[in-house]
Image 1 (tube, helix red, strand yellow):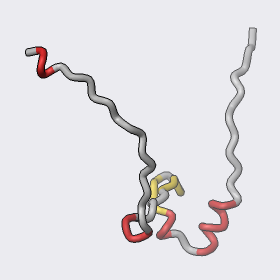
Image 2: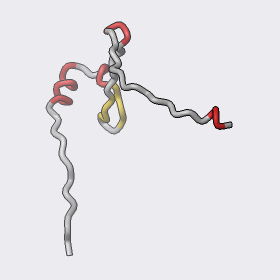
Image 3: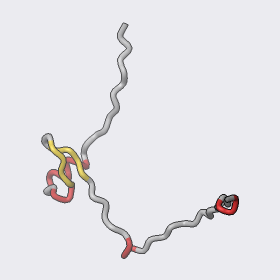
Image 4: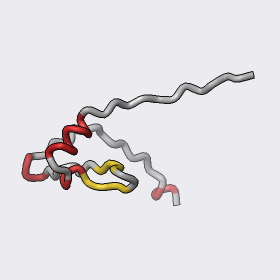
Length: 63
C-alpha cells in the first residue's frame, strides 16, 4: 500500500500559445434589461459602452 503514496513534484512551466491556438473572448453586457454580446452592437452602441464609467457604492453609516 505504501507504494501508492509517492510525492509528486510539479514544475512550473510557462504556457505559450500560438495565434492559431487562441480564440476570441466574447464580452457580454446588460443592455435595456437583458444581456447581449458586444459583437452584435452597432457603432453607436459600442461607443456608448466604451464611455461608461464604473463606480462602487459607499456604505452609509446612519445612526
